[in-house]
Amino acid sequence: MKLILGIGNYGDIYRDTRHNSGFQAIDLVSEDLQIPITKHDFKCLYGKGKAFEEDVILMKPLTYVNLSGDALIQVKNFYKVDIKDILILVDDMDTEPGLVRLRKKGAAGGHNGLKSIISVLGTEEFNRVRIGIGRPTTPASPNRIPDYVLSAPKDVKEYNAWKDGINHAAAAVEYTLRFGFDKAMNKYNSMTLEKQD
Figure 1 (cartoon, rainbow, N blue to C red):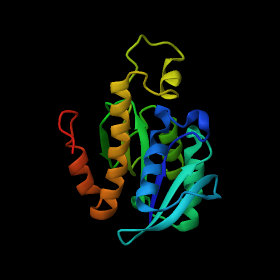
Figure 2 (cartoon, one colour):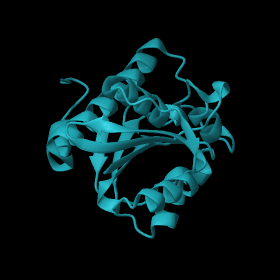
Figure 3 (cartoon, helix red, strand yellow):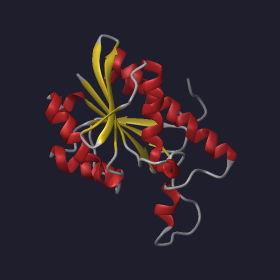
């Protein structure tokens, strides 16, 4: 069984924000695989189904980003999912908008959602799709990062690139389900902004 979690904040005011890139990507996966995310339990919304001969759970925590692990560990334990079968979709400031980067392990990099997941799993070794949101270009201030991740790009070109990255993330999930995470890494980590397929 594969468990795929999109990190994000629940609620309309957060819907189209950079921090909800994971939610947006998993919504696309849900639509493409026809696995509705409508069940409400384990501090999350989730859906169960089958895709490419795999049993799949798609989930969106209702705990807000900082406590994403609280929902994950409940679903993981109830359905007895191995860590190697977990895939996290997460916004990433170290990746440019329009790109995704697939990793098998790594530190949280300041992302509180990943910190929460690392804490409950007790390891940094789990698969993740990092969805590029870039970093703010204006001078830093104490509130700059929260304001940045809790908003959408105002520049049309950047906005469209960000949305392209979310589409690539959803495609990477489906590719992973069909061919495995290693092959998905080879395909999507080689993408550049100049050459996207």
